[in-house]
Length: 87
Image (tube, rainbow, N blue to C red; front, top):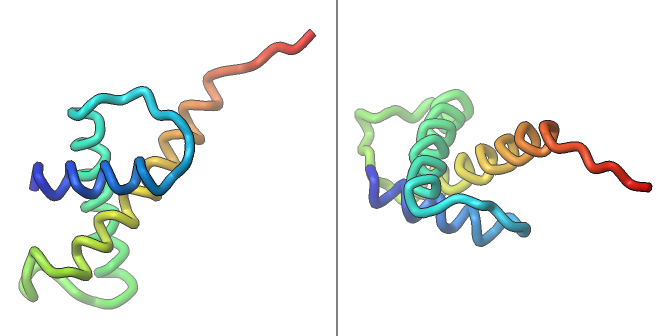
């Protein structure tokens, strides 16, 4: 799961433009969270579950999509804390 998390998190960070100040552990965590989000979305939309196999191409793609969603949500929440003051 850690390797899949690293792959999904890295692909998500490559696909979504912009700078993210997170290291390898943050990327792995992003990918693992993305795997859960992708698995939940796959189950809700298509009715597939773990009994049909945990490591499938659709699961890897779902993990990457979930990691992209998680990264965008993290950026939206994280950017609200920062306010830029222009003079």
